Image (cartoon, rainbow, N blue to C red):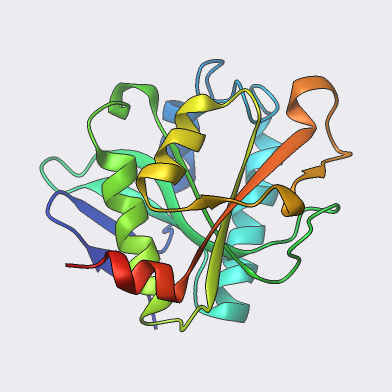
Length: 185
């Protein structure tokens, strides 16, 4: 069974053959990858897609491809996975994440996709809590987390030993099912 979720302007769906090349072309840029370890090689993306597919097979969810309805353009990804960074403090728990191409920034797409992902997480996948992480310098990502109703969880911060400097200092946010339900109209 494949996953598909629609919002007013977006489709969040499982990855298909050919999606990876377009995703890499639009998101593997110095600006998009600034807080994610920099521009990566093809082997990195092949491994990333394999991990997404394994996660989806094991849990029924992962980071879904985000496609704009109006023109079918691939904007990036958004969705839910399980915390799995080597130093993660919430290993195996729900985590939301997103990565959108630069020309999609500032148009509300990330928030729209993230809200739909949270609704699926708490509804369809029965998550008790959903976490999000970023690095201390990524103000835009942290701002979106707060706009989504997520709350800073400094006790879950960790040092990601795969990186150095500013990319190693990971800060955590979380949203409980109760907080999410209370924020719904």
